[in-house]
Image (tube, rainbow, N blue to C red; front, side):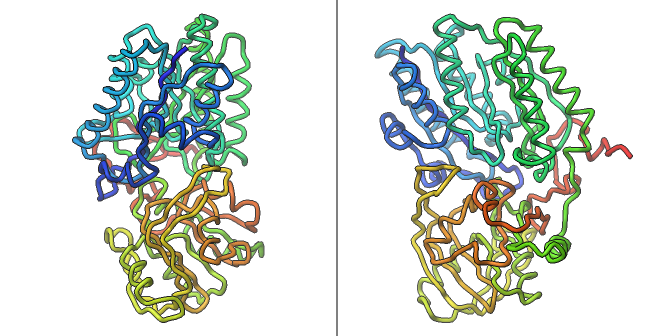
Length: 495
């Protein structure tokens, strides 16, 4: 049994001003071809790693095509996307000509947008389908934050979405997808799917699957998956910062041969989600309100999730409201992870460890990100950015933050980086000599993924809506392509 594996993955922010290029894929999480995919991702906690695990379990031959992922950012340049897709399809055809493939496993995101292509994930699956024909299965793994469409459901045999946020189950979902495709090829099952869209924006703080209310959602999903005839059930909370017609929450039910079963389960979950829509919405909180609540609780470190400038969602990562607030309040043992500002990082390297640096920090990408903060800081440490993820997200993989530095003014420390990657954990800060657990205040440019590591020692955690392009005040987002009335904007919360 020969099954192709690979994917082109990106979470695209329509509101980010910097486009995503081919170089961003190569320099981001990387661009891997053929056997490089196996070498890089064996025993790693991402979906393609789960595909490789599945090949070992089931004894099929995993045929690596191409896998690439660019850190979330602006619209993908169309010519670069078409170049990547063309290479993927050429490699897929070649593999099929050498010896016929039995199916394809794809590791995609679900919120990829290309210049002129709203549903790049759907187009990509259709292109793969055009190569292997209508009869061989394509099973796709998707992130929890996909804006799903009927187009991609029609082109796939089965879809498997993440069950966790932070995403610590990626390899597990890859193994689930591998199980499904093997059983399909062997004729044991015949997947059919039902798809439902819901016109709602889901607040990030209410999506964390280990806590209420999202744990109730996943408990219900897992119970419905046990119903007779069900194979898999996906809830996607959507990605609000991709300005596309199919934005929002969606449900994909996969049943074994009985379309009516899939339709019934999809309807049951969709009805329950919509009836409880106020539970999934949380009004944004200001920085100072969060600090005041944290101080009142007295549980340290107080961690502020700067979700409006989450580089993990494509925001520039250089907003300065929290930095200015920390300095104004003269906080001690305060840390910001990270501010993306290559110019400051290079200046810190040139200045040298132990010396003073006077320089404007942050807010170089857009006025929406605030005003640069003039810091008179000491250079505490510098780095070329190499580190190893300490899990659970991306466990077993290495990363690079580019030219980086730790600078400190009075009691406020800032880690300056060049790469647009969110702080999934304290691993990189540790390479600079920072013990995050000893801090009293920590701000992370992340929405939730940081929790997988930081919750172990955080005293209290607050999502805050500091000034930045990815505001969670959804009515303020400058949509142009959204076609539906959405909760909680045009469809307001009930009293």
